Length: 96
Image (cartoon, rainbow, N blue to C red; front, side, top):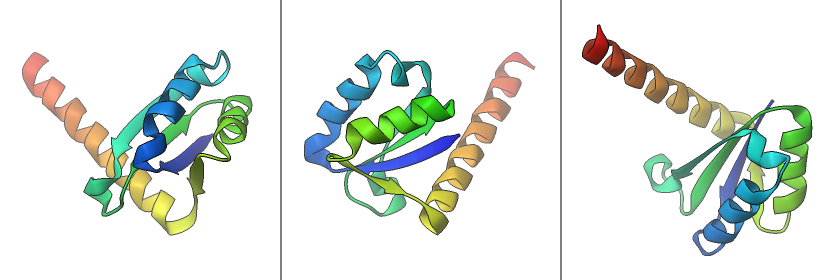
């Protein structure tokens, strides 16, 4: 399951620490990205994990972050996958 959150800059540190310290959510993959590269203010947090982990992250951040869905989430995920592919290709060139 994947969840995408948009966090205001003023809440970024608090949300980041909260998610990383939680014993359930911290087991998921947490990726934080500056939203400026996507034309937004604040930070994105991409949470990829089990349903329980994602639901807990939403519960913890409901007052501090906005869940992103629909087209905006699809565009973010597409860019992130492209970044991952480029990184893998780079490692292939180094170790290939």
